[in-house]
Length: 118
Image 1 (tube, rainbow, N blue to C red):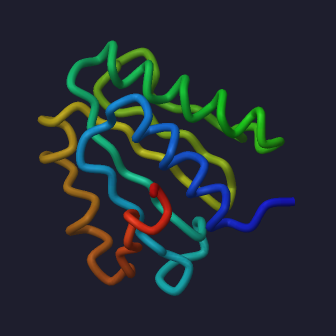
Image 2 (cartoon, helix red, strand yellow; image 1 turned 90 degrees about the horizontal axis):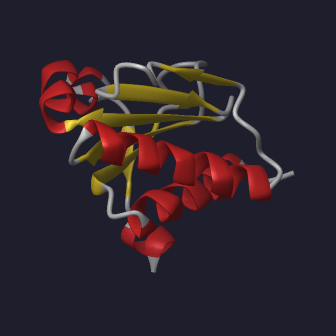
Image 3 (cartoon, rainbow, N blue to C red; image 1 turned 30 degrees about the horizontal axis):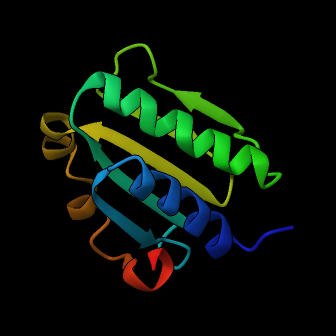
């Protein structure tokens, strides 16, 4: 069984490998019981959003962490992948700016991804 931070690291690496833009990891466990982390990323098009989500699902499936739920895949502008301890949000640029999750969850601690991705 992987820790929530390990699950987040696997997903962040998958997004980075597929050229996800502006990847952000928020530690939300102290703010809400929804999950331990939110991983937020931008795709350059609806096709890129789908590819990013597929990469996360594949990487976490291989790690023994299947998604509990996937929402919004048809629209291609915002896809949510729920792993229990981790919720991955992949947006197009316009949709990410509109919802501005980093502002909504500004009480959450931002995790330094450099240490995870390198």
